[in-house]
Length: 434
Picture: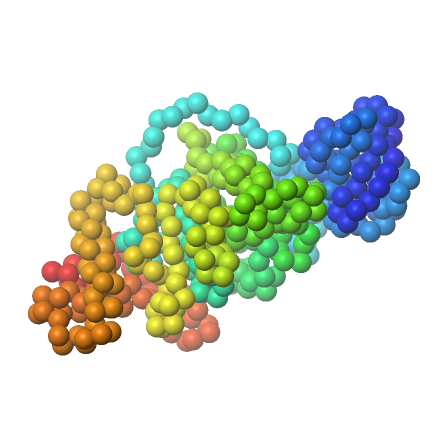
C-alpha cells in the first residue's frame, strides 16, 4: 500500500502510510518525474512518517503517492571505488560513469556491524609523517586518532594535504579523504594534487561540501566510514582516514536539528551532539582484521578553543595539534602552538625513553619561555639571569626548529619541501637542548 505526501516544509516531507509503514533509516520513493528519494528520520503517530529530502528536490507536491523501498542508503563497496570521488549517497562526482552494480557490492551506510569482542591490544606502531612537529609532539600511531585544531586560515587543510602526500607515498594501506562542509575549491585542488602525484590508485574520496544541503553534509562522513569499514573487515586493509572538517559535521547536524524544531542545549548546539559525535567516531575504530588511523581537522569558531563542540570532539581523540594565529603571524609554518598541543601516546612505552625524556625537557623549556616573555616585555632580555637567558634562547631555537617547508606548497612558493625522519628530528632537538 502506497503512502501519500501530506505536507512539505523545506527539507522535511511528511508521508502518511495506512499500513506497512517504513522503518527509521529506510528510503521512501515519491512517485514523481524524478523518483525523489526521502530518508525516514522519525515515525510519528497514526502512520505519519517524517522524511528528509536528500537532494533538495523541489518538484515534490502535496498529495503525491510515495512507496516504501525496503532498503536504506546503499553505496558501492569494493575495489571499483578506489580512485573515485563519491557524494554522500554513493553517486560519482568525478564525471566518470557510476560504479557497475555487476562488479561491486553495495552496503547500507546506516547499518552498523556488531563490534569485535577481541580486546587484545596490538603493539603500538609509529608511522613517520616526515613533519617534525607531528612526529615529535603528537606521534602518529597506527589505529589511533589525531585532531588538527585551529581557526579559519591557519593551515589545517594544508597540513592535512601534506600528511596525505607524505604518508600515502609509502603506498602502505589505503587512504580515505572525506570533505565535510568545506570549500569546493579545496576539494578540486586535493584531487589534482593526488592525480599528479599518482596517488589516486590508493585513495577513496567522499565530498559533501558547502554547496550541499545539511542532510548530505551530515551523512558524507558516515558513508565514507561505511566504505572504510568494508575494506578493514572484508579485505583486512589498514586505512588512513582523513576528515576535513569534523566541526562542519556537527554544524550540519545542528542545522538539521533546527529544521526539525528540536530544542538546543545550553551551548546552542543540538541536544543530540554527544550521540552525533559518537555515531561517527565509534565507526572509525580498529579491530583484529584491520585498522583505521584517522586525522581529523576541527574548525574553531571565532578562535575559541573552549567552544562546546570543539571540546566534545577533542575527548574522542588520542592527540591534538593546536594551530595558532599568533604563531602563524610570526611566519612559522606549520603554525603549531607547542604548549597547547598534547598527546596521550607520548609515553615511554610507545615512543621509547629517548623521545619521551626529550619531550619532557622541551615542554619544560617552552613553559619557561612563556613565563619569561611577559617579564622580558617589561624589563628586557638583558636583565635576565644568565641561566634564564640561555633557556630563553634555546626555546626560541626550538620554536624555529619545528618550522619546515611543505611539499604541497612547492608550486606556490618555489621552495622545495622537507622530509625529516624521527631520528633526524630527535637529533636536531638534542643539538639545541644539550
